[in-house]
Length: 66
Image 1 (cartoon, one colour):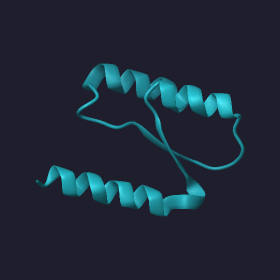
Image 2: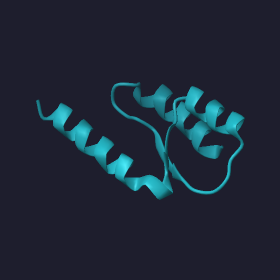
Image 3: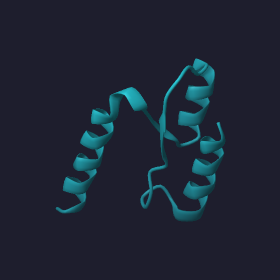
């Protein structure tokens, strides 16, 4: 996944506290590719479950406003 390579670069450049590299994906992927991408720092959301993404964004916003 190209997004996983970008996630690694962003984490190196900005640190883990400033960003959370995230991808919204759809389709069929090999499990090992997804596991590799997650292991490299990419957070993955499925396009058919965007509610999970918006819930996560709301959670982060609430945490940052404290």
